[in-house]
Amino acid sequence: MTKQERIAIARQAIDDHKRAYYKNGDYIKADFWDFAEIFEIIVDAYENFGGEEYLKMFSEMYEHAISAYGESWEKNPFNDDIMWLCIALVRAHLLTGEKRYLESAVSNFDMTWERAYSNDLGGGLWWRIENQSKNSCVNCPASIAASLIAKAVGDPSYTEKAKLAIKWVSQNMYEEGIGKVYDAMNINGRINKWSSTYNQGTFIGANMLLYRSTGENQYLIRARDAASYTVNEMYKGGIMNNEENGNDLPGFKGILARWLYRYALDQKDESALNWIRMNAESAYMNRNSAGLMWTQLATKTEDNKEYDVFSMSSAVSVLVNSI
Image (cartoon, rainbow, N blue to C red):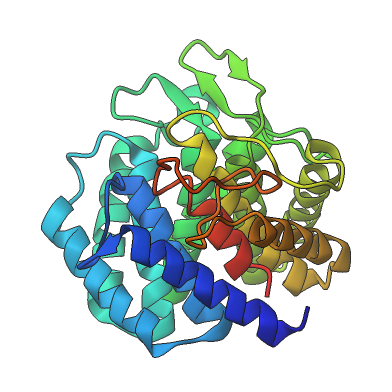
């Protein structure tokens, strides 16, 4: 399949998903972080292959976010949710120069960092405002957000925050030399060693951004090892046909695709790139008659089954991030 063919299919995947779920800046029945993640897919599309229609969507989706969530998102108890919308908006700013996107991202990042970061359990950010666990799912996105803000505003203090967040993950949630990223540490210090595409992907992304901003090889090594572990150990080089259960899990692999794709392009890792493309082709071959694709990329999407908007976004991200 040629690059232009992959782009055409990715555009169609976005259009089909929009037709089913999008209205006036909102993705119907998408929660806060679901919305933020789907926003990022639109950002990915504009970054990867362009399109004026996506710029229009940036504005529509931003207006919806402010209308639905307010200028400050402090009422959301999930610190990771807020980091996700910060990432989407600062990425949109970096592509467009739109100041209001950056202003919302910076103010809400600062608020969240202030309430979430502490020296308990060796550092890092709390997952929720109750401060009962520190998770990879907030610290890796926080590192990504901080690195992107540092680039946008030219303030090295944000790079230091990015380093702090990923340092905690690397020291507590990561198997050095193996590439496996753990999930969480509870307030008593007990570690959940489960690994997900979400955490593998954001760990790759956080480390690659720090490698690019600092030139320190430790970050590249960790990104490479996490990428290799995901492809060769978690999936044995095969199709991602799991993560089908639960409210959030079905949307995770779209996050992996985003950051693994950028790592593969940056490092010219043809093996990782070919693996993503293989998954994209499998997803496309298993679409239903409306062009929608379920999170199990090797399983046929049914015509007469009701699917969740977020679970149907994973495959779109895989297609958009495999050009």
